[in-house]
Image (cartoon, helix red, strand yellow):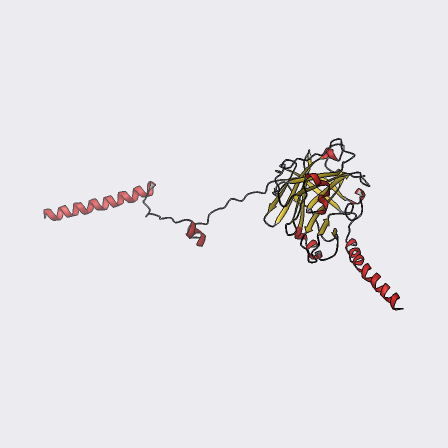
Length: 315
């Protein structure tokens, strides 16, 4: 009887982590619908966010959040500030800007081992035709070696519907930059690498991304990969492009924000005016017709005074 109870206890302990993972899996949203706007000006691919060329897409707890091993970092992964996504497009490219916390940034991969960047700090970006399923889509990956700064990329799947191959060049087609406490990935993906031709307003396509973190100093001393996935379809549901988010192109064109000109406060109108502008105003000198009249009057009075003095002197 004791052996039976011990066996049941061992099985219960083994199943518990699976139950935690199941709770995370329940967060999956397999029908994410988003719209994206056209960039008024093509962004400079430098890893710095051009706010006038991108629009942030909604990304919250209804989407798929996943920890590859356990829930030690669940609070971190489910904090929406730790992964932000921005997307736009123009006639040539789909533009993707992914910004994440640099708290768990570690990547020791280089181009000789680019196929394994998925289990280090990196991003995966996938896109396909609206009717893609299985692995019939473009799946790309990008990373930056945390020691050398080398930019690394990999193509796991070529988009079968696109006539062109995607061979990204670091600093031209993609950039990865540390910016304060964030690690930014910026990518320009030509439409014809996953679609037959550039889409038009109202057209739809499938899209997904994964932001990988890596804790090489976790509490138990082991290496740990952590994953935030935008929609189902790659890390968390096998290779299935049908589960990707559906993206619709809108006719909205992103424009530079209007710059408001600063108007200085009126003189004497407050502290700012006292600090910024000091003006010495001289006593007004009469000008124009009124000034001439006043001047002539003064001269006439003075003349009368002089005449009166002379008469007095003569007497």
